[in-house]
Image (cartoon, rainbow, N blue to C red; front, side, top):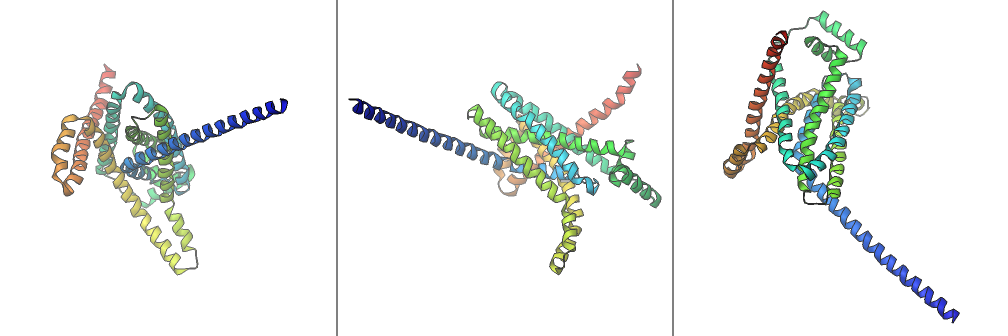
Length: 337
């Protein structure tokens, strides 16, 4: 009897282990399916944010132009850290807004869009300011001060025009880049959230975290590579191969043109991204674009909405600049009274 009881006990244990194995396999299968779903949703979100990623790249590369060569990577790293902090704020904020106040997303994005367009108009107006010709003596003085303070000569000149310390000017430049990143990251998070709005809250959070980390690594890794192109060119020119030397010279010659191009694209992106955020929140214009412009087909349907975004962004950005200028002129008078 004892032997039979032992065999029955062993049989029960074996059956229990079979049940545990089956349950583990089922759980693992469900976990794999969930991970696959998160990966698929992340892929869709990244595809939908591709356009904004291009604008984000252009804007951030443009922000580090004019920085001393030895400080380019530290500046990129500083902005990248600011970007991570932005996303650490935006991911939980997006989840909270999605859960409790989804109606807030559009107004908040419109405020960010207006700010981008405001900065875009200011950049363009700055180009029309009459630039004073710098004498050879001033160039030497700027270079000496730049070497002393560890900044670029262009930062010394720009800081002098704004009556600022050059080091403080570069700090503000980094802060400005982080602010711009916040708005672009907010739009990316909003787009990504839209792809998983019907999913459980934990899955929304997982997708947003993966997207946030992926775009930060991609954008700032590429920005770092772009700003160090001239160094790569110099390294290639030191090689013995004639092909390497030719490629190095081409890269060094191409880098200034690339930086200028990114500066132009970055400014245009402010109006395209900011204008799109504004238009999506202005129902009559959005409806007109969807009902009239897009059905035209061809190039008109592709470029028409972009042109509308730029025009609306420039108009609202100009209005914000005008309001800020009026406020700055009226404020001292109010204080005096």
